[in-house]
Image 1 (tube, rainbow, N blue to C red):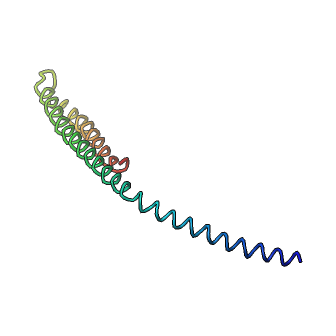
Image 2: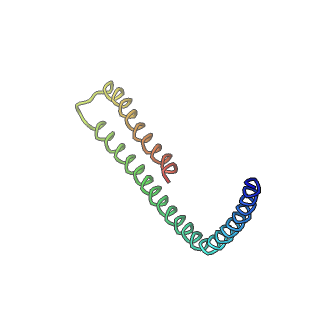
Image 3: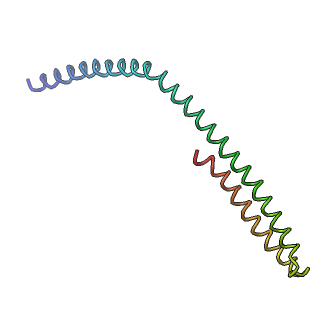
Length: 119
């Protein structure tokens, strides 16, 4: 008798679970259908905002590069025109100066490279 009851409960439980799962799938499909246009709109807007941000950052990096080159050029001209330096000092100083300019260039390059990671 107990065995018959357990079998009946198992069969009824399976039948009810099948109906519930079927209803869930149907409701989920309806919900997905209704929400998809809104999600598409969000994705389009997000993409537009992201592209505008990338354009802004690239423009700033380009301006920074030009500004850095101008500052480096002006600074080196100032050093060269300074009467208190001799040729040997200028050679040593040029190597040091180039080293720090390369560090600044590397910093800008890393900023540009990492931009994609953070986007």
